[in-house]
Image (cartoon, rainbow, N blue to C red; front, side):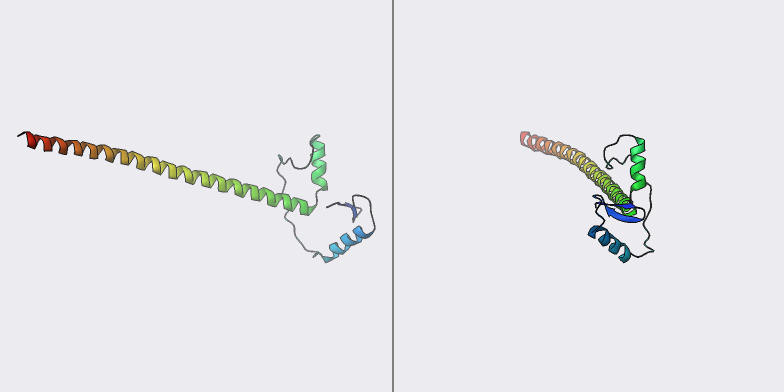
Length: 132
């Protein structure tokens, strides 16, 4: 959002301490003091934090991350996990449907073979009666 916290006060990244910091200060006063953010650890493989120079850069980024950023990342990770679970559920359901179609296809092939055998028997019986 373009703000950083320095010495307990929010300032813009441009260093403007004028109107933008008063807006942030007003916003801080409007927030309830007992607002509880969920603090969950970030996944170690999270790569959206920028260019990775090393482990020190990632640890530094995690330390400077605001509670709101951590909350949003956790919610996005949760959303991604839900999407993955839904995808797995859809894949398994479609595989079961495909297996059922294959099973029914095999049953119809067996029925088709039985009907053909019966038709051959009827044909043979019909011509056997004509020959006599």
